[in-house]
Length: 176
Image (cartoon, rainbow, N blue to C red; front, top):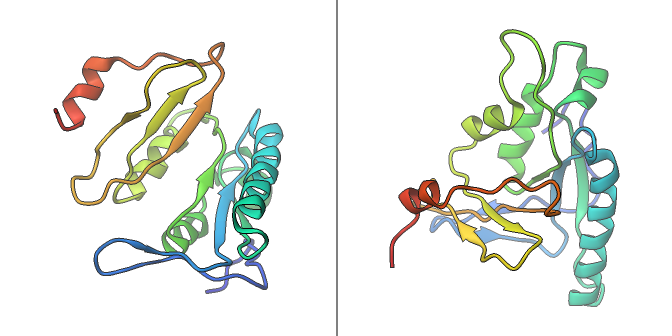
């Protein structure tokens, strides 16, 4: 598929979903990423380097991620126009490439524009979150989809973390 502003890497392959909802991950997957707003410009490039180094070390160069930047938030308003906070082609790329990662996104100020994080979640058919704070807390898994849970990790420093109410989590995850 061709996109208007998204540049697909010349090498690498898409991750696909098998009939049993397991993932078919090639040795050289293409993974879209959204840089994000604010600290995203600082965090995301470092995260990409850390993940690349981890893959290199784990697979001794036999596997490599080909990163593909997709746009949302303030950066998309510079690429697509001042009123385009979440471009359709970004949503298409997320669906086409199955696995993606995003940095922190701003909530646009003004009427008629909702949180970009809420907009992304509503466009993804299944999404669950695993939030592990930079303390010794246990990782909590939220089951939003009963058919196929997906792990999404968000690691933040204790200074900027906001505690999540356990009462909300207990309603959405299976009890032992």
